[in-house]
Length: 316
Image (cartoon, rainbow, N blue to C red; front, side, top):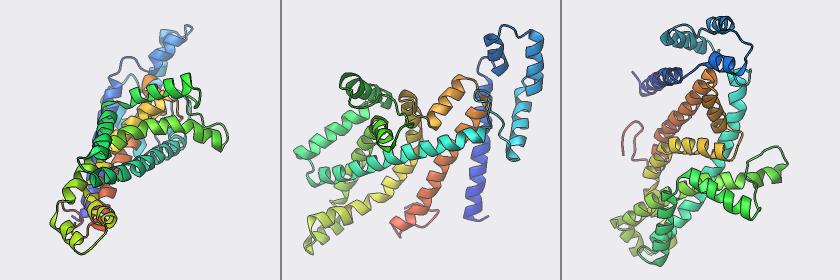
């Protein structure tokens, strides 16, 4: 079996196991859509509820419901959302695009800030710029995203009124960009702190290597040594960290989108779980899982491009 076929088989097996686990966990939640509907509609009789459960298959064992859902999903039918009364794919695709935009901007800000700060800390290792950057990063790691988001809302939305507290995308480009500042800052701050700690340590270790001393002896400038030689040596572990951190990024996006009412996948998943919307929650989790697995696959493809000594499918 080729490496590509093995990767594809692992991908499919992981999705199957994840779909089964999520389906059964959602099925174990108290109540079902018909029970919630009956509680909200006093005119619904027990016979009406029984007919609806029979119609949607909710009176069958959970394993039979899963097999029915799996068969329909393999044919491209992911069902309807109970909350929005729309096909699941019609809901997920637009929200997914907004979340990709949100996480892409946050990731760009994270890398754009963490790389120069890490280089600066390594350049002045164990001196006051390094100590200041390190202590700031330590404080950023200690603050969870939900607390950072609430703190930014209190400071910049409640007390000063400089920025909106919610991420509404219904205005013009300037208003939309302004409403994204707080959510992007919330998601980026913790990521900047994590990358600074790892990249700083990698750069300081790389600067002690023999090839760095050789480069200095040949007359290379300190900027070239830092940005070309030392930084490149830290890229492979940083790519690994970045791709493994996609799960954390997605989880943080769910929290931040809920706090700032951002109309993306995170807010949609939160509403689906709270509303017991089986189809929407299950498909949303599977889409996010696909994104994380594709990110790890991209890491395997990037290793040989960053360091030719790394062969595809093998370690460094």
